[in-house]
Image (tube, rainbow, N blue to C red; front, side):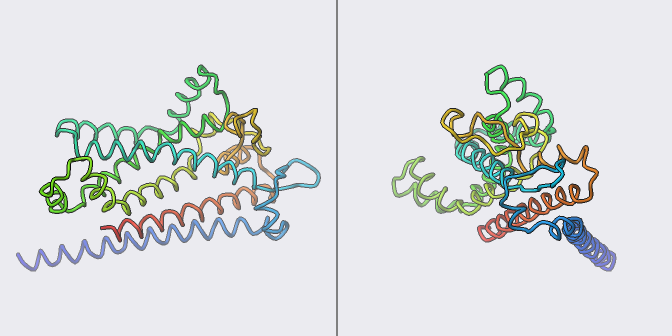
Length: 289
């Protein structure tokens, strides 16, 4: 009996190890393939020009591939969505963890899981109808709002786990000294869980950079730089294009090798940004644990 248990443990240990190696291998292959397919554009266009030029015109005689407007729009949309979704998500996580009864907690877990599972195209379709009726139209603000709603389930679920990790004796010790619930939350629970909450925000940040379909359906997908004048409320009501929507829009008709390579280079930039944010988030999360 004992030998069979050891054999099963040995079998699953090696199975998990092989699965881990396969995952790492796939990640490296994706990164290598993106880099390999991007070489053509980097051999013909300086990296500085590719990253910081505002001219993207693959159909012109003198082809131009500058992704700076897309980088700027991606940052604008991502930071805006994070600023809206983070405080709302943290408040929701605190309420569910500290005030909600058992039935509400179970129901909220089901709803959060359901929101994560809904395809992004459904979010985009719903947002396009609602936002057009509200008069927002194709704009950066529409993209920020729908992305904020999509990020909330991720931040809420991870923040709840971080809040649960706070030692119970710290809460009880504060209560015994006369602290009320609000004081315990603000002085004990949130400071103790801040690393986990920050990791949740960083993971959401990585997803926000990579979101495509929902953003494409509401942002307008204009290749030029956003209009940051006061007439468009500093760009919020201006149509624009992110890194992800640039790829999905041009890949449909791209036939020139240099054009295709530029799209892969755009994907490489996204890959590096997402990999860095996820790495930092995991380092912070496990240090908190």
